[in-house]
Image (tube, rainbow, N blue to C red; front, side):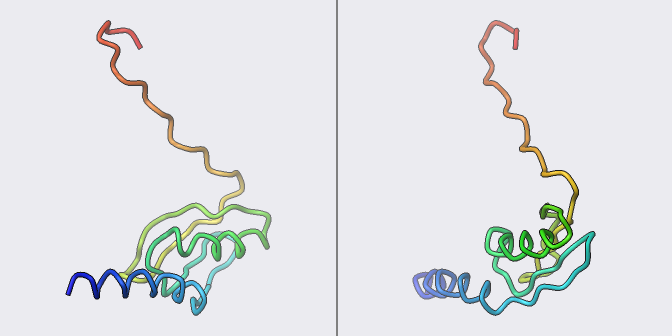
Length: 90
């Protein structure tokens, strides 16, 4: 049962990207169906690029619906926190 689900997910993700519907404007884009944001991101980036913008993941609106904002500046990665050194100084 679990093996069947894994096989379905592995093969469904690439197919979802090929058959996905991309809808949006210069401020946001919705990609569906898509298993997760990494599957939908290339399509969202392509859409936002038309407006000179970058795709920024907002949320999963439904099980197979991914919403991105089209932003002017490329999003910066979250800062990496340094591990505690034990001396109380960062």
